[in-house]
Image 1 (cartoon, each protein chain N blue to C red):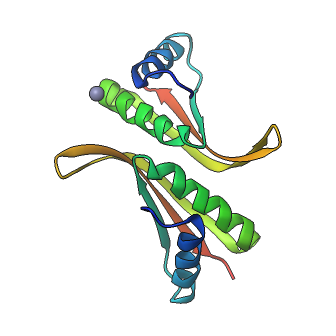
Image 2: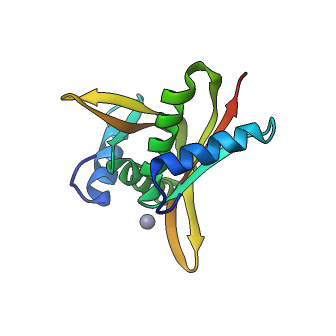
Length: 79
Length: 79
Ligand SMILES: [Zn+2]
């Protein structure tokens, strides 16, 4: 996640689901953690039961010498 | 989570662990989702292996007529 709108990321995820059966990951660092969850909720709203929340991972990582909190939301399309 | 510092919430969580064997929940809505993850990471830093991440729940909820994304991080102290 960066500066794109919520809908930009929603579209990106839906395109990702169309490209194959694999997982789609929503990842956000720092203030973009909240945005990743916003995108997840908008996908729930659009896809309903078709969306499967596979895993939510939280942690911290070093990027260019600074430590950031992050979230990774792993999603699958069910049908 | 609201306006308190990360350390305020870290102290609150550690006091919560001392009060009994139950879960300690970190909850954040909207922009405070990121802060909840920051508090989790600081607890990992302080408690290391003593901290067990039991569950991470994400979703949306209505508060006073507005819809907010939220995260709830459920934690346990291991020893
Ligand atoms: Zn620390």
